[in-house]
Image (tube, rainbow over the protein chains, first blue to last red):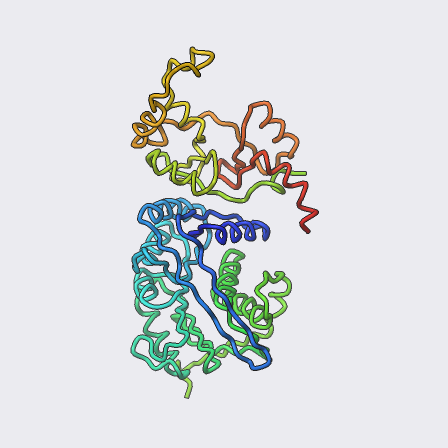
Length: 263
Length: 148
């Protein structure tokens, strides 16, 4: 679900159908944005040119909200992710999580900034902020392992519905998870990273897969991270085969930090 | 071949309470001539087609006249369309509609569409929408192998 428009939007919808995925996009007046990533593998340099998204009208948002309410009823897990396009209030994700919670549907929130802070108040099951390029989060210096755990601890205590917080900071090569019962420093064996594009989408997709296939949250996180590994090690964006993802689970090590903070 | 292999996996729909003005915007942006109407449980309760709106905006006596070309254009269609804009989808939707299930064969669905003169047909699973099939989908499915 989401908003699409213009030629790029149509192409996106067709490509999604080609991958055998059912869609329920709201077609909008504006044009779906294009983001360009230039990967210079010789210089190990990545340049990203990002367009601003199209403005969404109030009418288009109302159509989306109506469809979301109906889809929430028939969904098993709901992933809410991405930046918010112009024209949409920053509390939109909080509103969507409220709808999902009313239907007792587990919700995974993965987004940056104010939308995350407002969304997390509504109580998603999984909170995964996008903290790329941010040195400080919830008044904690997140350029250290301890800082990541402290920020995670603060987030999980915002709403009792939150059961898992994920924080990844590629600049210091750290991924951590915080649950109500413990903290985990995540290690991925022999990672050969190409680029980070689609990494968080793969993680949330993998978690949703785990939750809909009777895995507990931490097992689901491992599946998500395995999907993330496949993405990290591929220069192209592609949909990995399930077996390919499951094979990588053994490379994910979750070290429980008993004293909650690593010295 | 089963219809689920060629159906268009788009489950866009509209609410019965929205106005015809909004409906027209949705149909225009989706480049569709019909769209399913769903209730709060996401069950399909009707179909609404552009044809229904046009028929509703024509004066009723047009049905009795074989050839209407001699009637001067008084912008009647436009005026009536304008007056319909505030009506709701539930007022014009067809509650008796033909649907198929994803397990039906493509020949069965094609036959259903031709015999009932349908341009598109909703594909349901337990009353819930899982896709739509347009006449062109049968023909474009012939090209799938070529694209690969």
